[in-house]
Amino acid sequence: MAAPQNHRNQSQTMDTLDIQGAIDAYRYCEYAHRKYLEFDIPDLEAHIEVIIYALAKCLRNISGFEDREEVGFYITELGGFMGQAKAVLMLLQIWPVQEPTAHEPTVGQTALQWTAFRESTVWETLEEQMALVPPAINLDESHRPEPPSSPEPTITDRSPELSISDRERSMDQRSCGPPAFGQRMLQHFDFHPGYRNLNHGSFGASPRAVRQRLRHYQDLAEARPDQFIRYDAPDLLNECREALARFVHAPTPTVVLVQNATTGVNAVLRGIPWSDDGRDVILYFNTVYGACGKTVDYIVDSGRGHVSSHAIQVTYPCEDGEIVAALRAAVQDCAAAGKRARVCMFDTVSSLPGVRFPFEALVQACREAGVLSLVDGAQGVGMIEIDLAALDPDFFVSNCHKWLFVPRSCAVLYVPLRNQALVASSVPTSHGYVPKAGARFNPLPKSNPSAFVNNFQFLGTLDTSAYFCVRDALLWREQVLGGEGRIREYTQTLACEGGKKIAQILGTEVMENQSGTLSRCAMTNVALPLSLEEASEASEWMQERMGEDYGTFIPLFVHGGRPWARVSAQVYLDLDDFEWGGRVLLDLCERVKKGEHKNTQAVEVGP
Image 1 (tube, rainbow, N blue to C red):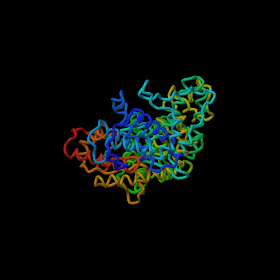
Image 2 (image 1 turned 120 degrees about the vertical axis):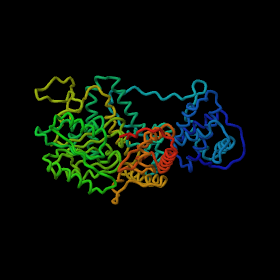
Image 3 (image 1 turned 135 degrees about the vertical axis):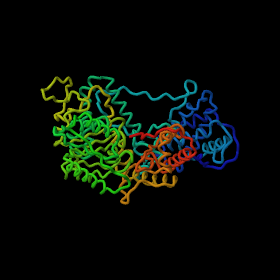
Image 4 (image 1 turned 90 degrees about the vertical axis):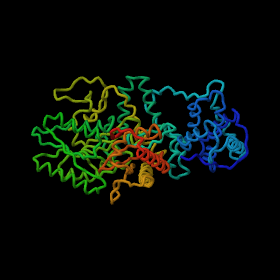
């Protein structure tokens, strides 16, 4: 990666700035980081970049700042404006002081830029306001600013709304313009400064403001455990169920929250009563997510011959119509073999490869064939539009901690009223279960009128604080990011264009069909310039090196006899990140070609 370019070409040499200059620089950047949009300052990002350079030079000479991580704390605090990874790159480039590169300012040049900035009208504009900002560095006591203390939880106010300041609402939007997605959005997240998250699809990420709400709910539980868990939490849970039901266009009594999509799939498949005649078959596609495939295996293994399974083969790139035809053919094959296709499980967006599945057409095909449809939408809510009223599946599950920005872990399970009797128990079974032998004592005072909802309301002592953040995440997406339409347009466009950029760098291609339907999501799949043998030997090594040597992770997998890489788009990424990721993959492939990898068997990593 190239070093940041100079903003001014100065040649005069000056001494390194003094301690007070460092303090002033930090105070200015802290203030500008929070308030910059209140001022009409052109090229403010360039100004902050100069100040970060100056500050890094200064901090290096302050007694006690001998640890790179200590200095890194200040740099990354300021780096949120333009992207933490970029700020840390700047730090690494100037520590320790070396001969400057062609693009790196010398100490003297940086000092001169700082002096010129102090004399500029921009500084005069902010100087009065900056005086109101308390000093951020107390050199006499500590080199690290103390974090703000958390206020005591307000018990009388069970769930105050997410506090989104005017700054946050406007920090990524000018006037009524669209949100400024890309690296600037990193200031809302807490990724390690040296890490680029190109794999949002596996574990998601939650913005700092929403995770502060998570801590708030945890604090409420710690302050008065019985009051909160027994009386307040059920109401909070119902409020979040209502908000999520509106979001996916479903009746509230059909929606419950579970830990993750795999838990929801387990609740459905373990609940369905299989026929004693042994003819029932679970259909699924060979691109099924591994944990869900193993759930099918367990149901078959423990079913005592009552149920079997059948994998429908799909090889990409193929058209949506071919996938639907494969499902219909599998139903007919079951009937011809004296079997009965009872339920079919399929994705909204599959995991590996990360492509859009024709789930709408598959739900309709299942309905016509009399087969229950189980939609595994783990990569669904928050990435693509979900309208359950129009879709009308028999079962639907989707993670909220992936693309919806809810903290880990939280998922939605939808079961329409007509099928709720089939899901008799949560996983694990808890106080909400109604046994056939008669009711047992339930120590929890609050219950839901719906037996289905009550089943999932309390599953033992678990930290369900993430569930309570659903409303907060939805509010943050609307007020800070500008709503679902803007998010989908940006991420899907970025995935499409970013995939093309990576393929261009690698000299390969993107996984896509002629209709262009596979890429209608926020992930892209790019072929690697490796043979199948090379990928089989080196993929595990490549994935390990990604984190150790490059500070990222990109899932690698084999499909159709060819190695691929899956990259996720998100609002905190831009095309530069995809280009960087493409160069990482190219470098790794070149290292494999040189035989640098260890001869280990490849594994598919990551959901």
